[in-house]
Picture (cartoon, rainbow, N blue to C red):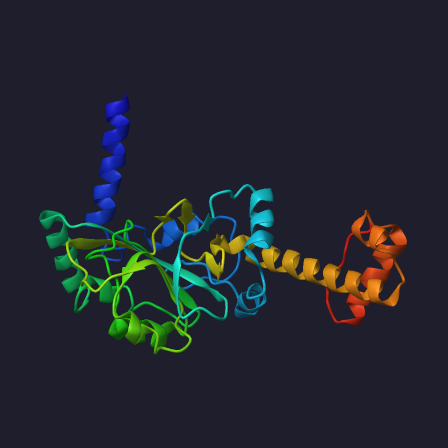
Amino acid sequence: MKIMICFGILFVLIATLCGSASAQLDLFSKDQRIEFTPEWHGPRFPDGRPSVADSVLTRLKSVTAEEAWDVLQDAGYGNQFERGWKIVNPGERLVGRVVTAVFMPSRPDVDSVIRANGKKEGRVGAENSWIIDILQPGDVLVVDLFGKIRYGTIVGDNLSTSIYTRSHNGLIVNGAVRDTSGIQEIKGFQVYTRDMDPSALENVMLTGINVPIRIGEATVMPGDVAVGDPEGVTFIPAHLAEKVADTAELTHLIDEWGHAMLREGKYTPGQIDAKWTPRMIQDFNAWAAKKGSKLRMPEQ
């Protein structure tokens, strides 16, 4: 029975790799991207990837790793954060819709098929340039290069320029980059990488675009929202992005109101730090409404 199940899985994988003309490299078809993101009910890109609204991305720029962590843990998503990055061009928070790519150690027979299929699809250049062609404004390219550093440099300054030109956003790579001095000259192009190395990319093959990937301890899906801060990168599932933004915004409002009440002497530190009374909650909600926020604290 186990042999039959394993054979069935292998057959499906081979059929996916070699079957439909719509997914030579992708491994996942449009229908599968929709199937494996069942909680997302908003708009999607033509290939099925969830498209979180620009307004939500803007709101997520002020979210900390801790704020996102609490929401994700409560929702049962305990494997969405990864630490241990070196950051090129640190500064404004990195936030964007995820486009995934996965590389594996090269194997000639498999890579020959990948290159042949790429040629049929009209792809030109090296395989690490293929993943740039589909980027849209607001995307963050997230690459699983299995932690390879020497000969694991996904881009230099030329491809970095192309990424930023298409996405106006950054790059996250579980691998390395090269030409760091040139990348530093691309203002606004933020890179989270494991390391830098002068070698060129060698002995790897591109086995998937916009498929589920593993980045360290995190499982990442195309259409997730990547949020980078000094602690690391959080990969927020598309259907939880707005909830994370709402929760963080409410937390910020609560802190702001509490500080204002302490400055005015209306409430004591003990009252602000303890469970709020119904009157305090009413005062807060009225204050939030005056500020133009639609968020409210539940009265119970």
